[in-house]
Length: 437
Image (cartoon, rainbow, N blue to C red; front, top):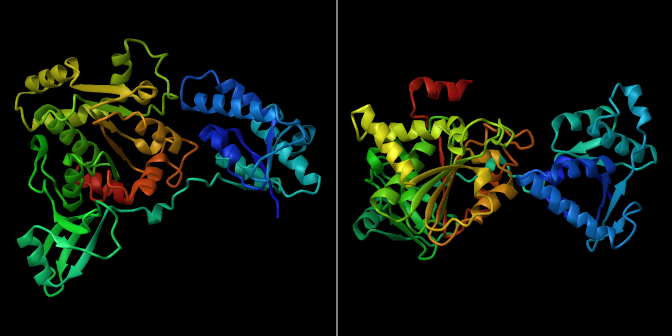
């Protein structure tokens, strides 16, 4: 049976493709949504781009028919722009009719009063709550959502006879014909006869073999792995064949530190990349730092301070004198071996032969992450780090963020590797806070 979906602005700003994601069902876009798209279209960020693209799509539909009555889509559904309705009735519910969110609710209420069963689709939690209070069905935009509890961990345990583990160690590899591993998935091999007899391996999907870790004893820029997952992470970060890496973990698990240390080794020591480019989304500042005083670097310095903190931690292990640490960091930045940018300045660029780290990637939408990864030129490695449980973007959650989306879509590709870091190594207090708070 055909359904009628009333779409909120934030869904379209999340992805303009949402307009065409409802298959054979009818999509109603309140006029207030068009007004909000018009307000966003001049903004120079991803929301602005989505608003502009959505406006173009709607303009093309307008040329195909009367969009106020509904334009048929090839999928069998339709898209209709709906004029404000039932506005006056909002006041009896104590809702301000001047707010666009409430005007959207009024349109859904109007459809309900006509005998339809509209479903409001919004990424705004409070808007969904108000809709239900008015007797209107409401749901989040579910396309691209990933079940966080089923998120790929990047490694597993396999129990096998001790003789096979000895063969793996002796021959530096072991044929594995089963289809239960993803490409570049790590394996902790345990002997059935003695669980203390173990070995670490990575699955090569092309050869269908378990291979030993090539960088097992590596300590990039003096950073030594503190647990099993950190060993796996370093292997991915230092492997030249893997061009996209995702590291997920709570605060203190070392995801950003490991990415920086390995990036420095590949860029400064091995000269595999021209520079180490580090970026973060600037969520608390509304994704725009233009109004802050100072040069671009001065504007970025406060928000990028966690990156500098990790750089100082790495340098402290190599230089005992704090002045030497400051001089080395300053030299690397001034020589542009290390470049720190806001996400806003990366879009639209081509980024060849660089080690790109995107920190706090859980605050990006799936489309934003796609935009960033597609910037990668020849010879570039992209590393996304983040914690899906610590999201600052009001329209994303642990299931709909771009970081999890990438993990799910790339998890069985040769160029991709992923690991979830579970144990906090920052301090016993940090570990306890991550666990109990």
